Amino acid sequence: MFRYWNPHIERMPVDDLRKLQEDRLRSLVRFVYAHSSFYRDRFKEAGVEPDDIKTLSDVTKLPFTQKIDLRNTYPTGMFCLPGDWVVRYHVSSGTTGKPTVVGYTQGDIDMWTDSLARALTSIGLGRGDVIQVGYGYGLFTGGLGLHYGAEKIGATVLPIGAGNTERQIELMQDLGSTAIACTPSYFLYINEVAQNMGVSIRDDTKLKVGVFGAEPWSDETRKRIEETTGIKAYDIYGTSEMSGPLFTECHLQNGIHIWADLFLIEAVDPDTGEQVEDGDRGELVVTSLDKWAFPLIRFRLGDLTIIDNEPCECGRTHPRIMRILGRTDDMIVVRGINVFPSQVESVLMRIPEVGDNYQIIVDRKGPLDVMSVEVEVTEQVFSDKIADLMILSKRVSKELKNVLNITAEVNLVEPGSIPRSMGKAKRVIDKRQV
Amino acid sequence: MVAIKQISIFMENKPGSLARVAKTLSGGGVNIRALTVAEAGDFGVIRMVVDDTAKGYQVLRDGGFTVSETDVLAVELKDVPGGLYEIAKTLGENNINMDYAYAFVTAKAERAMLIVRVDDLKGAVEVLQKAGIVIATRREVQNI
View 1 (cartoon, rainbow over the protein chains, first blue to last red):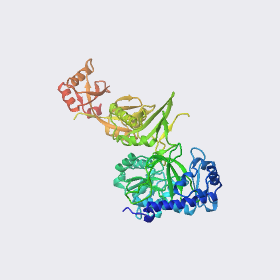
View 2 (cartoon, chains in turn yellow, green):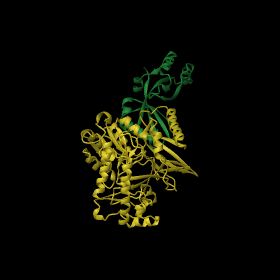
View 3 (cartoon, rainbow over the protein chains, first blue to last red):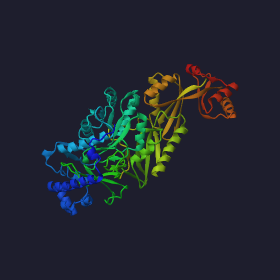
View 4 (spheres, rainbow over the protein chains, first blue to last red):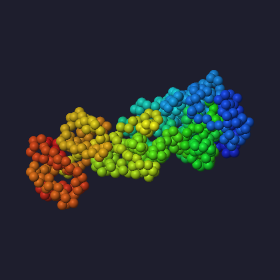
């Protein structure tokens, strides 16, 4: 049932894989130097020439790039091929600043599609599956990325996009969707609406797999999704700069496989930029090895993770990254303590009485930061006794304190009062005027 | 069993909360017999006895409220000094705890009722009846 899409590449011995990466890195460096004044300038500033890059470890000689570079060169200043090579653009929304534009040659699209074909195959999907793509289509990479990946493996695509929740559930039943791809928070909402419609995802649909990403989520949420709906929930990863969603866990659910022939990854200390020790948490930095309209050289993704270079038990030799804790820019600092919304989530989802939705509110009272967490009281646990409710809110508060070492006020709110999201959920409201 | 069903609703403590509940019940043609609001900081619990519990529960649920049903006793209070004392004493002497209680006077003002939630429903019924105190049945409460 669990197969390989491309066994030759996916199981390639580590030494051969590194050799392949090395060859591709050398070509890439020459390519960007020859084609892009942006990279030529950067290389000169860093005092490095293409010929200085001989082995994989030489990658650290190359300068970093980051999101701000993309904004500063808006729209296409970091592209390395002229516009007539580009067959598609995707554009990120740019809620904080200018939008960012990424472009693809036909080969780049094929690479993206192939990466997802390997990933979707690794979680047991293929011909005969009906994959409901509930990510947004259009400028966002999620919808179209999954769409082509799913078609490539011979599955049937239901390109419904995000939103229209009751229709999602009707079509899921009528067309027998076996898998859904969307944000985890949207899936929880779909499940909530299904319950209100009297539909049990476990009993009344054929759904068996969820491919969830585009926002950080926790293992506890995975557990909750799997227990309540009976599906297997897999983490998917990728950013628009890298193409879009590209990689998933395999069926063993033990880290996301990053195809090493396509991308070279490093984990660096976010402050110093030095590579961290093997097994330590660091900021993910990525260099593309087979992407040409808009290649990446040591692009800092801002996502914090741990890289595991040990081959997986599934037989794949490529490195894995552990679940993304969050982006450096998602992190909130409350009274000097770093908090990721995903950490709060993992505490909350461990407490069965707490509903699936939550919101973190950070405010400043006088000189002090205060964090409060709003959780919904579910009907299943609503007790007529005030004391029970107060015990629940104290218990949540205590768990948060234990895990995060931060005092948070817990407010119980009515079900449905926390806004639902069809895409990336907004988990933090920061009311501090900084 | 003489216990009657009370409806409890979880509410955030903010303006208009009770109005939404009242509007929903009125829309469903449900009449409130007795009501009390308990508040605990940011949230509160509205407890009520209505003429048609099943319908009240349904319209509130359909209206998106968090609702639960609880067994309580509707105990007749003699409308004379010492009426409450008699009930409280009987329960206390038998080591039965009252979680909460609220009273109302019936429409015809002939008698008063105490709605009480206890930690031992069966025991409470037994000792109250033994002491000659009248406990109203569901039908009686409905027909008030």
